[in-house]
Amino acid sequence: MKFEKIAAPKGVREYLPPESQAFEWVREQLISPAKLAGYQLMELPVFEDTALFNRGVGESTDVVSKEMYTFEDRGGRSITLRPEGTAGVMRAVIESNLDRGQLPVKAWYSGQFFRAERPQAGRYRQFYQVGIEAIGIDDPALDAEVIAIADQGFKNLGLKNYRLEITSLGDAQSRAAHRVDLMKYINGLDLDEATRARAELNPLRLFDDKRPEMKSAMEAAPILMDYLSDYSRVHFEKVKGYLEDLGVAYTINKRMVRGLDYYTGTTFEFVHEDLGAQSGIGGGGRYDGLMEVLGGQALSGIGFGLGVDRALLAAIAENTLPVQSFTSDLFIIAMGEEFKGFALQVAAVTRKSGFSVEVAFGDRSLKGAMKAADKNGARFVAVIGESERESGSVELKRMSDGTSISVKIGELHKVLEA
Ligand code: HAM
Image 1 (tube, rainbow, N blue to C red):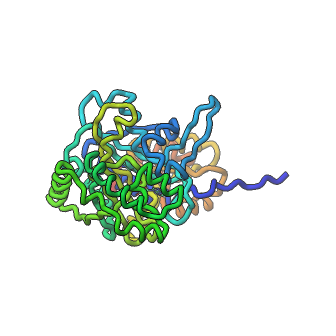
Image 2 (tube, helix red, strand yellow):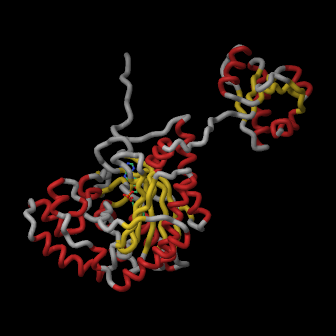
Image 3 (tube, helix red, strand yellow):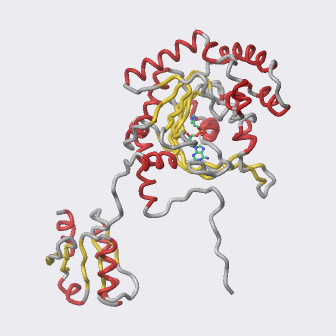
């Protein structure tokens, strides 16, 4: 019987060697500035109670209303694969009482996220983010530092063709004042029922409507930035001042709408110029009401999520990936079955000194094994047989020039170091 092959699910992005090395490098560059700034790892579940996202991310968003992978588990509970990371971090902080300790709680995370979007280049149903959240302190200096950490991640990748857009979505008072005028404006528009319902949930969503007729209808709508309370205006001015102190360039985008409902105050996006339609390489902002909405104290928060897949595409577009391929320092070939155990021991001992060592497996001829060592790009090759086992020394062949020297097994690391 011949079995059919099974393909990966539609729209998922996976990384295999050698591309996975570039992916790993990108992910580490993006998150390393956060680690240096004292953020600590949170490993969270990839699935949560559906209510967390309904309430946390907001039912008016496309993410919640159209894109969640929601299913009933075997106990009849409604479960959703996480479409984003902030709600889960907040849930964990509240549940573990971290907000009763030292503030701000500073967390970083990295992993898969799931949105049932229409797949295209740079847009996947399973994608990767690294992110940070700083919870519990409302200080414009923190906003600027969070933005600068994200910016440093992109700079670590060597990216240049991107811009940082910032805006303020104001505090509750600003948004209430804006909402009055915005609803007046929206009520004067000829809208279909679904759009009107969305406006009732969150009128700001209409700024995000991609249909041309809606785009032009919203052109003259009142803009939130013009309604900022004194507190929000001063807060935003300070954030801008700190960004200038830090030398982080930005442009103001008064019409920015994020795809998640929890944002308040400082909000930002990084947009890459070479990526076409899926140009958002990262985004974030304040979410001062989220903790309370999720049943916790009324504490503020700010954070970002950076798209690892898109950052990798951006690094490819700008040609900034380092040339690197996995090559081992030493490749060991056993001259027959009876020396394999010894070859494994030599490999294990040498790895303890921090060198990468591979062993030839299977029953290849010496010639075949040498070919494999060459293909592998190994720096040195050692062939192990009877005399090596007896003498405790091996003949180390340097692949770059073909020269050999005899080295005691315990001293292999000295030659490999050179
Ligand atoms: P977001 O803007 O929805 O924010 O996602 C952050 C980044 O994830 C985007 O800028 C993009 O690079 C990447 N991304 C989103 N969807 C996809 C997709 N379908 N395929 C590939 N990449 C994608 C958040 O998720 C917020 N939790 C960020 C945040 C943290 N805000 C505050 N704290």
